[in-house]
Length: 118
Image (tube, rainbow, N blue to C red; front, side, top):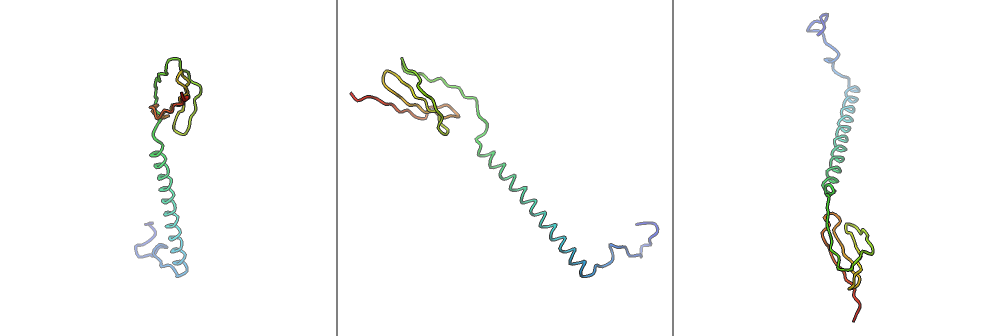
């Protein structure tokens, strides 16, 4: 309290508002509340999207190494990536063979052999 004011002197904060000022202040409070809710909702959405992307990303790529033994005289004709699989076409004395491997772990996922009818 300022030294020039006595305890009985009303200040601007103590005087009642007229009805027009009261409506204006109510509207300002409502708009501030709506703004706060929209801000909190936006932050929640951003955190939700970040959390979803982190949980569905599968983590970091690990260093995987593997050695695949080919049949005697076999050679790799082609390699390709199909989705989350690595596809390797191998030619050997027995015919063509297509081998698939999981791209992240390099574990064998399947084998398809092509042979000539006798």
